[in-house]
Amino acid sequence: MQADEFILFKGEAIKLIQDAICKIERLVNKYDEKVLYDAYSDIHTVKGEAGFFKLNDVAEVLHFVEEEINRLAKEGKVVEEQVDEIKKKLLFVVARIKSIRNEDIRNEEDFLEYVKNFFDEYARYLGKNAKLDFKIDASVGENLIYLMHIVIGLLRNALEHAIEFPEQRKLKNKDEVGKISISISMLPSHRIEFYYRDDGVGFPEEIVSKVNSGDIESIKGFSSSVGRVSIHSGRGMGLYSIYKIITSKFCDGKIFIRSEKDRGSEINITFLLKDREEKC
Image (cartoon, rainbow, N blue to C red; front, side):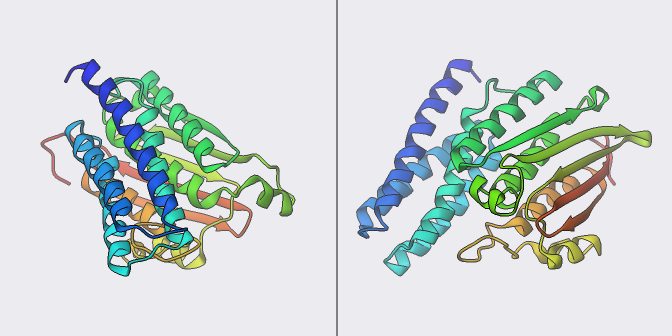
């Protein structure tokens, strides 16, 4: 894969997604099937190219957006809440692509740079004011690409659903700047631990109960988002996606949550590393 090919993809993909956002926003005032189809075409083009460059999480999000657009086409109308949810996903894609400085995550320095770039970009797009404290143990070494997917999943969940807008935080007598911290540590016996903490809205009790009891499969359709409930949005789906990573790529994956309404949440994620040929 040539670096100049990837740079070209980044520029074209960001422009296409931004164009798609503008087109979809116009549909709130006046529904137009052709405009909706044009937006779908832009998104479909980026999805295909994202798959070529192995940006699988981007391709997955865009596939979900395509499904949402197909629903809108069947309904023949668009409401503001639906547009907000689609726009949020597309802004994630823009931030994800724009923040990549290298084609590959090769070491801890690349990892830290990518995480910071993504966090700053996505927080700005969403209008969230938040500070990230991120630390990674240098001994973690390999498997950085899979660890990156977990970190991005946690940050996406935090910025979309946990951290309030500055004016909302002010009404709750909170600092207008939300706080998020993530640390990745290597424990004895090749076990990795993620520790996550935020000072946001907290998880719904139903999600906490199901996750801590090991019933994670049942939360994939649960959403705490404002607006229409969708399997593709909400904190339940975000945690479920992380769970699928740690159980498919690693061994003995576990998630535990501590949460308090409007005080924030803590998440512990642990799993065992395994050799490429090793089975759990």
